[in-house]
Image (cartoon, rainbow, N blue to C red):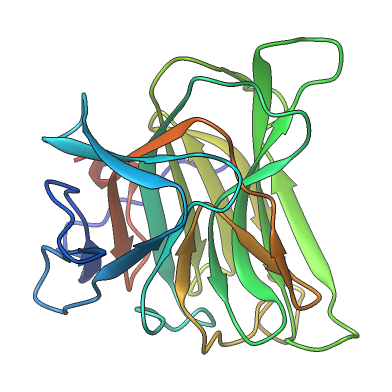
Length: 231
């Protein structure tokens, strides 16, 4: 894989949540863009290792969502956050996604490793359309598994100028996919919301993650270098 991009410019923060409080079902965006998250179902606010608070999800119906999409998913973006789960999911589950009306344009999932209880791998998927004929591109960090019960930082970077999708785990680039030969963006422009804790596939919402804690998430409208991911 090529070395990380050195980018000395300050990326535009589209949204950032500290989870230091939930009032009337809303946890505020600490950036200037007011992309507040509405929590629903089995979600609670707890004290956490990262910043002052984290959101805890019950894995049944707990989720959080914005009213609109903070980024254009067809151009450069970065999605990042800290995760910790106290339960091993029985199947793949969703950390976050950027949704349209029928599909998620971008989804970050955790997949249990077969035969290795307590371990799993991270996978990001891009969907090229919001219809029945959607094509999904997947990129996984299969050589860098994560152990349940520990905090881990995960970031998804789509570098439009380099036509590349990158997946980082704890600040290390663990996987990369080159789209240089693709004539169109590998993902559609999502017009739904940023969803935490559940996915949208074929019009159905699910893949909730039991017992997970989520802290210090950030969304950038640009690709971010490795050095700036975990700040």
